[in-house]
Image (tube, rainbow, N blue to C red; front, side, top):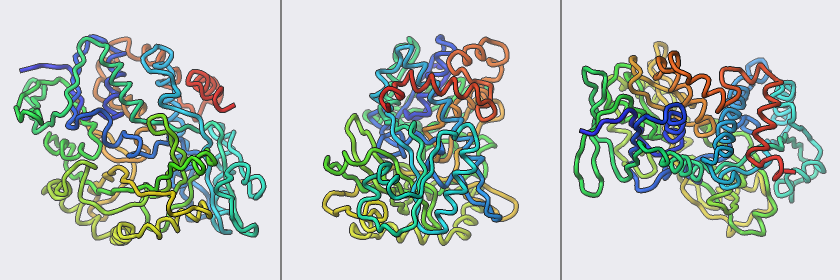
Length: 495
């Protein structure tokens, strides 16, 4: 039986980030990464299957909900922004260390903008701006209701728009576009430099069992030969996107009880016509329709995909029973267990409006989807846009005493009490906060190493703000943000 210190299940950005961090902290660790598909970053980390913005809370209006009293809650935007700065610090360190390639291969500067129309929405955006702009994390945000100014910020969006329409927008110039597929593949490539790292593609985990010595015996199937082998691992991380929940259930840890998943699929309208693409260089986010899940916030989005620019609009949500894009229609049904049946049924009962919305979205015609696009780009032509599938998201369902179950749209780490196994569930903001999420896994599951070794000191060298709250320390924020922009070439390329 092969023995490893760490087994990473899933070759996405989460597993790659955790593996790279652990190898930097202790190069002697033996780490195996198992991926059921034939290529790294083929599911949620692929450029077409995630939001790709480098979520920082600059433009995503669903991160700043309006309270009953009319004020805007910015707490989540602050948390996401400071978390994204941690990701940028990590990537900067890896670029400077030669472990990642030229930064323009995976990250590029682009304006992050929010755009709304109508009196009520304009009032909301102004309140949002005033609340965010007062905080040092968002001090560089700009606001305007002037059509002439907005024509300079977002010419394609303002083209053909009624001059009398009430509109407003915010903008942050140092936003980013991230190709998480390229980033993940290069993280895994960098891990390959370490002697005790092993990557198994086209292999699936079929079962796991914890033994008395606290190790995990994990059964792995070669998808080509169908041969089954067993690996003994001291620590297991389930970073398989939508596939993490079924694997967590296979583990049988008590902490997994009551968890379920609500799968949502998505689609993009994509334009590659250079005459259109070259006239829009920003990410413009609007407000989601009533009843829509957060992943359906409409945005007209410049995206670099494998080095080539494209323009995306959407995503258009759709109902599905798959947990992965290349999964099975039986995924949802096979996830139903005695301990999560009540929460799952409760959420189904209480979210009928959401279900109806998803079914309606699934049956929209191309003409209807382009009509939604025209809210952002009035002169859009149907023939310039084609529909492509986006990734799968599995939103968290948890048991609760009041309703029996609740649906959540964030991310959550579920770990065994002894720290020998952890899983990441949920979706947004996902990849953008991968470094902070994986630091949380290390702190929770490698606590003894953190307390007894020099890991904390190493982390401070890799991530200068480690252990300090950036949303409470404006001077440190200015330092790390300036360094990140310089190290990743973002300041020079956006000038």
